[in-house]
Length: 411
Image (cartoon, rainbow, N blue to C red; front, side, top):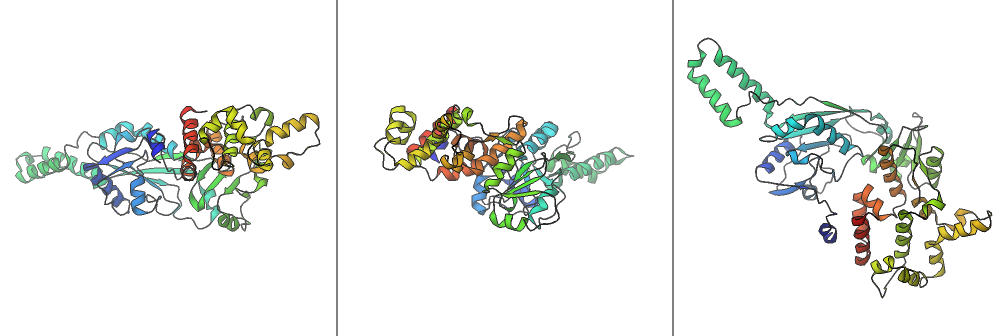
């Protein structure tokens, strides 16, 4: 990952945590019912998730109590606007945006000497079966401060009121209680430590529960798409819910998404786009072995591209250029069938969210499409960084350079 780090493309906006903040983070972990970290320094994202602690605990979902109960931690106002690097839901960043938008000033004040534990409650204690995902509706975002600071504030205010009554101002014992409270917790009288619960409404979304599930319910009929075959096989046994159920690898899924005007693919338009250029070059790179030139140069130079295109076997050549071959043949006759010429996964990779979708839905459908056919390296980085990093580890060093160049220049 060193090349990605140097290009600021690998978790570059994480916040460093050390010293007193580590103690507060551990207090949050204990408050939420998790075990403390033994690390003395680490980094966190906008939701309080740390890749170092995830590695230490060998659990990327270490801030979850089961798949239905995720949590977050705020220990610094610097978390405002920061990425959520391993979201459990596709809407996690939106929830954190709402938290800081409404409670931002209070968070700035509270995190001076405390920390905030967040619970995301969808009124589901535990998932029992895959279609429990359909229960997601309104999520209540609850807040809790470490050290019960809100209760200590109430006690401090009570002591102050008691001090003002009758002749209590001469009570030395009361003096000492006020001094001890101020010494241990500071003057809490004028601080606003009350973070009222927030409500967040879900619509269509992705969740990592059950091995990864897409729920599309803002269209003609609710659709549930599973990444895990085992979970899919369990879900299709359901006879209660009136929903469409697919596994992400089913070709019929693409047809249904088109029927519902969720995705589209105009090949004559697509071949003129940077998307197609990236995908075609990705296809060629898969066939290049022991090249005399760096793969980055081959993909960037038209002469070298043509040279190596002609070096691979004819079937591979046809696969790389299949879309253009199909369009050329279609100009001469409409008797040719797309499925006979264009590789299915390549064709799926060329689909885009329908132009009529909102920006929120487009992002979700981009993520779905890149999970169906992960061939556009830029979109893979944008919409599913976790999968991007896994693919990246398997690539040739020179191909990595080309990919980093695509991402860095958005081309």
